[in-house]
Image (tube, rainbow, N blue to C red; front, side, top):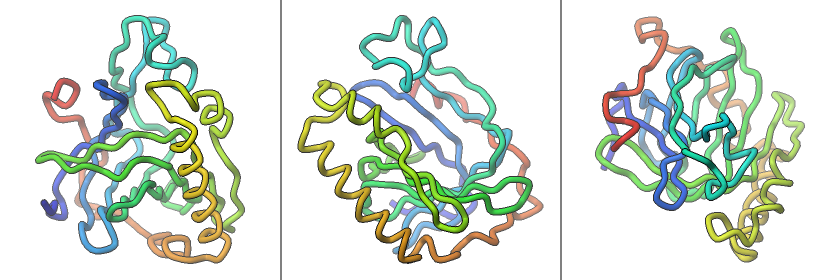
Length: 205
């Protein structure tokens, strides 16, 4: 299925039988380059937390007490998110007060489409990239610690994630698409709502 530009869909992360993250996103394009989505600062998003307020970065799902999706406001940045067809990653463009502030590469499984959005599974490792294409790893320790855990990655899966990350680093350093300046001058349509809200049923569907 192809999502029509302008439509609001939800982008979700799943782990096992649990939804761990939900964002409402505006579709900008859905073509051979991928699904391009917009999420402005102040919009809703929901993430899995436990009774003590701990997130998945702090504790594995199986150790969470009374896990629930907690809705809060996305802070600091507007983001574009590109999910290339069949790719095991997404690329995020960060904007602060309208100015491009860098990229973020999220390693994740290729997305699965559903009628009202897309689902993927976070693969823990991320790459933070400055506008000058200087980069650093994020959450490499989390990937190492959780490799072998039945809810996360086995050794072969972790090795595949690292290999894909190394390929993306080479692309970043070479300034290849999408790290070639594409979308860095993006400005949202002034007629769009300033914030996106999660649709009814988004946390239970």
